[in-house]
Image (cartoon, rainbow, N blue to C red; front, side):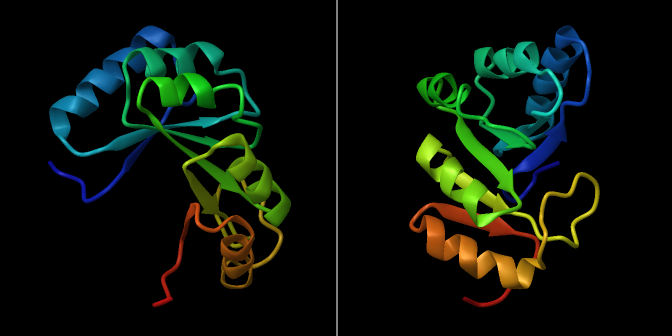
Amino acid sequence: MQCRWIWHSASADVPTSFLRKQVHYLRTLTARPFAVNFVLHFPHREGIQVCIDERVPALSFFWGDPSEFIPAAHAAGIAVLHQVGSVEAAARAKQAGVDVIIAQGVEAGGHVAGQISTMAFLPRVVDAVAPTLVLAGWHRRR
């Protein structure tokens, strides 16, 4: 099975040995990049270190400050994505060295930080952090 770009695997609260096995398993499924996602509101230091040690293609973060993990991730050749719900959080993420900012609008499911719609939010984030790559959950030819 091949994914087109980045396949996100949620880390949840799993033992590090299981997370390491999951990373190895993902590599059997695809030669394409994948990301492991961490909600930083919960303690994940050991799991993030497993991903850095395994040199996963990308780490994705949400609900917290990823800045302490960015230097080690970049040193291992890992791209860092961070999901934000405000222009201020996007600017902090850019300043911290995040490679890709994910703009989350209020209509997102699950853990929601956005307070306005993605359609209104995305252009504001792009203006604030250009030329940093920004992703969002809708498409408009812009």
